[in-house]
Length: 161
Image: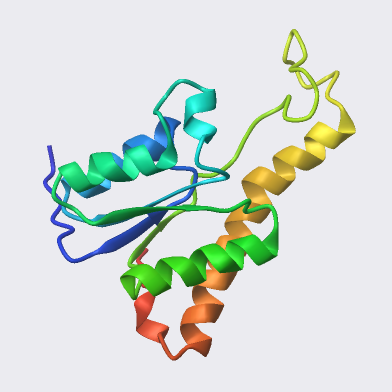
């Protein structure tokens, strides 16, 4: 296994109180990064039985010896996406790693079709999928870069290829 040393790095992982996002956050913390946990609200993880709450996941990371906090925001709302980035920068001063994990699948507004073959998807659910998987990523990246540039923090969000 390749060892990665992320000591001194700050990671913001959207949608990280449950599922893959939670695993990404824990992996980054084990590699030494301080991690900002995010979800749409504090209890989103509990709704799926994956963790008691977003703040509980932040506590898991603190137990690993890393700094962590939980910030809630509905990233489909550009104002809340901007507030997430501002709050993250306010707490940690910079962001080195941005993992755009927040998203969702069909059945967000109506029950998931059975079979889930994309034929009987409500148009509102199609829009919801675009909002939660594409626009959330665009908004978070937009505000991450624009806030850092406008606040003279140009080096506080690093883009590695």
